Length: 129
Image 1 (cartoon, rainbow, N blue to C red):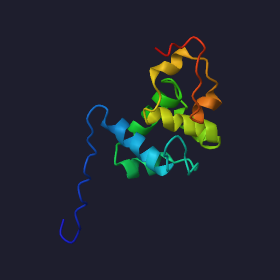
Image 2: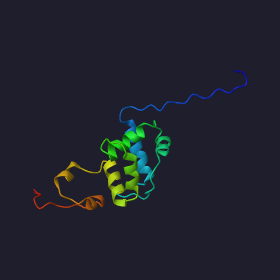
Image 3: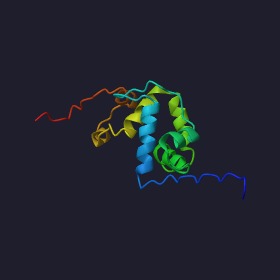
Image 4: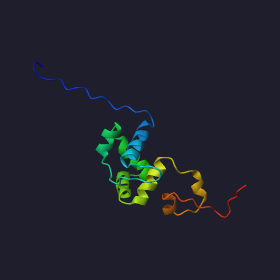
């Protein structure tokens, strides 16, 4: 192999269980300029952009989107792209990924658009004591 350059060995993107999800979530929140319930950037990311930006294995990205946007079914990335074209959907998705929802929302009948905008609806049956 005289005269030929050796190809550098690609560094494997090793992640522990859950690490890829944390990296993708962080990258999405940063890309969409998410802050306090609102995004400033509604441009969807391509899979390759997330792989490079979050420094994760390519297979982790569809797994993430299928899990969080399609209930484990295929097509999660397409649903994410759809959410990017609807401010309420994307803001709500980012709030969920950021962990800003409490299980208490399961016990109130709050319309999604109110929740997405940070409104707090008090149920008449709530006890203040």
